[in-house]
Picture 1 (cartoon, rainbow, N blue to C red):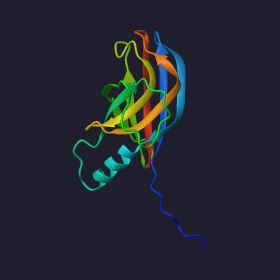
Picture 2 (cartoon, rainbow, N blue to C red):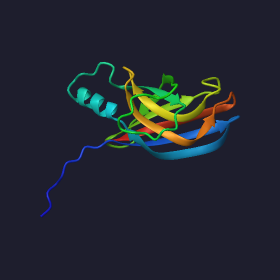
Picture 3 (cartoon, one colour):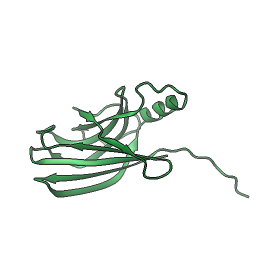
Picture 4 (cartoon, rainbow, N blue to C red):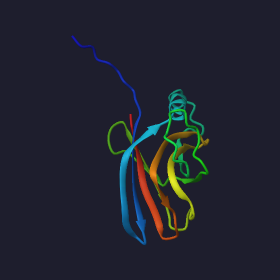
Length: 147
């Protein structure tokens, strides 16, 4: 006889579309790493300590180092507010974001992260090949958290 086992894990799916001159040049989807900062923020949220715990910003950075659960920052981060949220299924929240043609030009983007309102790194995704951000490049995407 098998007993029911409760599991409460975080998983994430990172999706993005890169456009050059308005035309799609890359579509990408992969799992991402939820870091320890997210677990700490969630524990405090469940206890009612909501001040500055919610997802607030997307960060773009330059490090290609493999993500680790102990990561706390995005290297040379350019950050901006996320553009909104959706709830695609039970136990899921989708964080939408975009980087326009007039933002963060000149960076070789290797990593992405979501930050809470207090600046805590919640998750991190690293690319093998950089996106060379120029004035005709835009990126949009979303991060889906699955609980």
